[in-house]
Image (cartoon, rainbow, N blue to C red; front, side, top):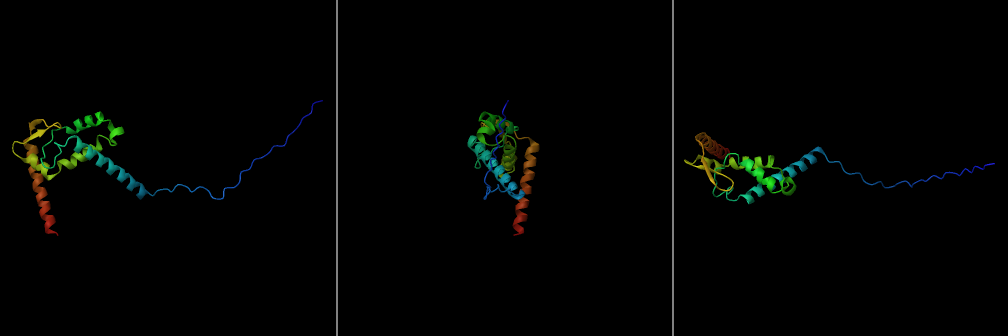
Length: 157
């Protein structure tokens, strides 16, 4: 005859947690937008500083020179060669385009374009083609608009 032994199962119970761990605070939409804007601004600042340090002779506020057409592509290549986003911490398209856009909208840059017989320069400072007539005329128009805005803003104060 076979004996069957049935053992009683034991249950393990854990003590109740009296102080649950605090849950992570969920950020509001405004806080997330603010953080995102801060990150974006930091990337733009990093891009600006990198460009100014890499090509100080071309981005010199004292001696502004017209840039060669397509210079953004040369900057993108240099960005890739410098290690790209992994090393520099910013991308080669949006931050570079933002910086270049703000650079070429400066009054000093427009004056450099508007000078008769002004030439464009590559990133390494090599003189290139003359600024074409349409670009020169557009720069003169932009300078006039800037002057008019400055006059009208002084009149409102």
